[in-house]
Amino acid sequence: MNVSRLLLCLNLLVAGPALSQGFAGLGTAAEGFAIPHPDHRLEFPTDHGAHPDFRIEWWYLTANLKDETGQSYGIQWTLFRSALAPGEAEGWQSPQIWMGHAGLTSATAHFSAERLARGGIGQAGVTTAPFQAWIDDWQMAGANDLSQLDLSAAGDSFSYELSARTTAPLVLQGEQGYSVKSPEGQASYYYSQPNYQIKGSLTLPSGPVAVTGDGWLDREWSSQPLSENQEGWDWFSLRFDSGDKLMGFVLRGANGAEDFRSGTWISATGEVTPLAPGVFQADPLAQVEVKGRSIPTRWKVDLPERNVSLTVEALNPQSWMDVAFAYWEGPVTVFGSHSGTGYLEMTGYE
Image (cartoon, rainbow, N blue to C red; front, side, top):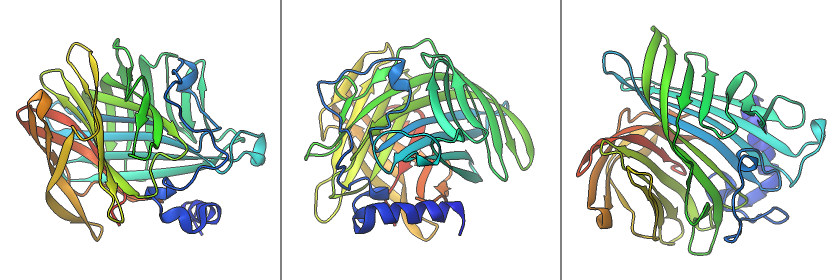
């Protein structure tokens, strides 16, 4: 049995039949774990680190890149922490499990890789002084305030080494970092840095490629980020040529439940405006077959209060992350009332 399947079996043993509640079991009850509260205020650099009393957490960076000929690429670097029980312990007694995902996408190819580790033995983790997130030899490390990051990852057929730099402040999603995810009140703590300038090198089967572009970091932690009646999400991070940015998500209802939609508008001057539930609109326009599944890779996105009416289209419709809990993740192009680029993540399509 390979390690991915071992982790999947471990989660099945822990979550049991309730694993079907939400993508990767994220809609199951979180008894014993900490839960987010709306009156809590995030503290930095402490909150750049791990929160072992919460069940799930991630450090997630995507980038839209171009080479010197203008060809487009996208990369993903993600470190997940998942707890079997609250708290931390030394060595193999640690209840923390770590998982890393890396992706590299062009218009004609998509590569993905996965790493798995147990907490407590030094194989994976996060520190804040200085900031470092790692699993095996994959790393994202840099300044305590995340203004500078260097990241690297490698799979069987690809690798990348990139630097990310910004002088912009962090963006607190939702209400001061408290992001509601359902009518029932499920929520996460959530902040972003959507203003990185990226440069570095990709290594493809055809050889190395120098690239530059823009990056977006998301940090999120919770213990039950989905309700039991939500099956997955469609998440958009869009960067417009005007300098404005839009983060929006659709949490898809199951068993007749309504979808839950929300997001954030980030102006070119840095003003952050949380969107009321339902204001952000995203609806599929076209679907393609990906790994035997019907996946919407062309979307209509509207935000009437900002005069936004867009078509969002995948650079490569076959951007499937073939990992233990599989999902679609890839760069997108944007046209319509605004033009630009971004990233789209879609989970729960079985």
